[in-house]
Amino acid sequence: MPPPFKLISTDFDGTLFAEFEDPPIPRSVQELIGGLQSQGTKWIINTGRDMSSLMEAIGRARLSIEPDYLVLVEREIHVHEDSRYLGLEEWNLACVRAHAGLFARIEHDLSRVVAWITDHFHARIYADAYSPFCLIAGNNGDADVIHAYLDDYSRTVPGLAIVRNDVYARFSHTDYNKGTALAELTRRLGLGPDDVFAAGDHLNDLPMLSRQYARWLAAPANAVEPVRRRVREQGGYVSEFSHGNGISDALQAHLQTRPHKNAP
Ligand SMILES: [Mg+2]
Image (cartoon, rainbow, N blue to C red; front, side, top):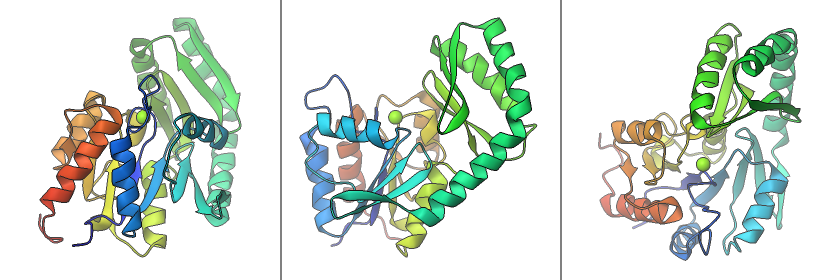
C-alpha cells in the first residue's frame, strides 16, 4: 500500500534537529523519511532559518537524506535541483514585494514600538534582510509580554503579523508563512491537504499545523503547550518522545493508522 502522505513538511530546530544530541537528527527519522521519499513522497524542511544557517546545520548534522524543498525564513520557497536549491522565483518575488510594501507602511511607527520595548525590557532589537524589526528578548516571560504588545500593534496594520519562535520575533506579512508556503507547494504538486503530513514544535509552526493545510499533524514531546494543544484538538499525534525521535514515532503511528482518505 502506498504511504498515505505524499508530502511531508517538517520544521527543523526542535522538531528534527537537537543541537546537543548525537547525532542531532536521529537515524530512525532519516531512514523513515528516506524510505518514504523512495516511494515518491516529497519532503520539505519548513524553517525560520535562512539558507546559509540551514545548510551549515544540515552539514553539521551529517544528514544522509536530501529535502526536496526548503521553506526558509518561514516564507521563501526553494526547490532541490541537481544538488542545488533554486528559489521559486514567482512566489519569492511576490513575497519580497509584499514585504517591501508592508514594511514601508510601518516605517514611521517603528521608533515608537522600539522605544516602548526598550523602556520596559532589556532586549536586543535589530533589522536584517528579512525584517526591519527583529527581537531577541531576555527570556520567554519578557517575550510573552512584548509579543502581546506587538500583537496589539499588528492589529492596527492590515497584513502585519508577528512571527515568534522562543525568545525571537520578527515582523512578517500575513500572506506568507509556513502554512501558505506549504499550501503553495501542495498546489504545485497537484495534491491536497489530505496528502500532507506536517510537524512542528513552536509558535512559528502554528500556521502550518492546521487541517486546512495538512490532514496528518504531529508534534514532538518538547513542543510548546499551544502547539501540543492545537495538534491534539485537530486529531493529530503528540509523541511522548522528543525532537526527531518524536517525529519518527509520529510518522510510524500515522502510517499504522491509515484511515480511509474520506474518514472524518
Ligand atoms: Mg522549531
